[in-house]
Image (cartoon, rainbow over all chains, first blue to last red; front, side, top):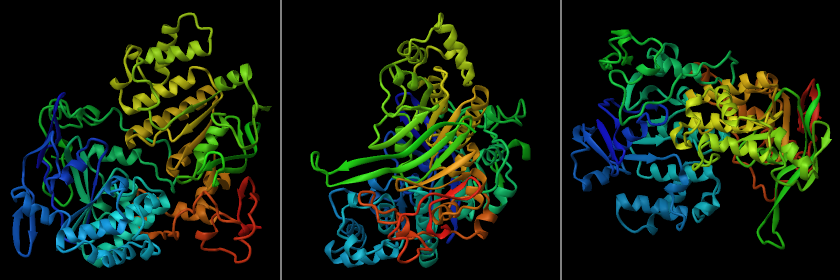
Length: 314
Length: 321
């Protein structure tokens, strides 16, 4: 998959040649810093890319009922049936996902009606059940609440209720807890774990927080400058990080429980994606750069259980 | 240890609803006694609405307290004005969270910093040379002197904001979530720089953050706020390793830790619900509606005082009194 943004300043190569798989029932974490392409990649899965962005090439193979479809080739009509019903999203900011003029219950019922047909009103009682599912206290009265009457944590739970209303097979959660407090974050992660068991969903979990990856993921993809640089099972990634960027990222993360010495920041800043560095996009910041190689040729990602795109390992 | 900043029964209530006859008050900061020692970093943690930012601003006299007193360097500055206030402003500075908003986009770095020198009438004969030298202090180059904020990355802007505070040679800095808007790799750069500067310039920090990892990395002591009150205060290691207050215990247990093995083995204390409405806080201990160890007939009636239960480790909880 390749996604470019055509801006006045030039073509931003936000995501370039990214390939990965999501297995049934797993939590796949995608980590990366600002501008790494993690959100764009997952939005492109159901063509949620708006101009000036454009999916330049690629395919998204979705397997269901024994058949395979390429989501990017489906007509918009067909794709809309899948998006929201079979593949649902939860974004960072719950306030922008909710309409301030309608009650929570109405909005959840509307999401259900949009995919199952019929009148919105007939799904209001189902909305109560869904709110109960996401552990909102007193759902019978909350269903009549407007978004501004709820706290950030409650709003995010309502959005999650909306996302799971049609029992999706894939849930894409894009920094779902960045806007809430730590104690509420723990509640929401716990909720995701429960829902995953109950509904057997696969989850793509996008975050910049290595702590949350360690808590929650089965498998991890590390993105840098619009590319996947490493992919591994969670234990393997933390015990044996191979890409210099992943290693740097892990050294720069504070472990709040076990004290550590001085933090070692990754020097430099993230690359400009209008003119990304040639060769390996991390080479200007890399401590192990191989002269004559890294700045010229792009390293392949490899094909193991633990994939890494780095010339040190070839 | 000498205290540089001291508050006595400091409170700030914000009226809500109705201008002339308010419906109620948000007790953002309620009767806080706090000392910050010279040369230390005091970490102030708490969740949204706990009052940590309000407390930071009260101490800097950016807002007027409803009641209570503030001492700086032994001097009562609660009612300071005129030249005394100006002198205080020079010695106590603040760094805000968002470096995109705290710098004027129409001024170059040089103009921004020159303004500080002019406002405070600092006796500097060659400001351009001086500011150029100072840029190196925060890891920037002299050649970047005449650039505008948009030409810098988030981390570099935060460096400029830090320099703007340091140019006055202050003794005390309030760091209000200084790295929350930055990426992990850049956050580490800024935290390390703040540590180095503290040593070099003998600064005292109040480090406000919801990021407990960053607070622990920076702080000598940590204070935990919950709904306008300090519920726990102690040496950084003790507060993290042996938290006493049930709220702190839950908070620490809920921290995501970057170690998958440990993360899966330990037990997370899941709190019920969310903080109560700050408009009419619950009577007694403000944490009692969510507390797993609530003592019936006591916690919902009496407010627990902040008591020293171990050396230098204070907690406001009836379990310990």
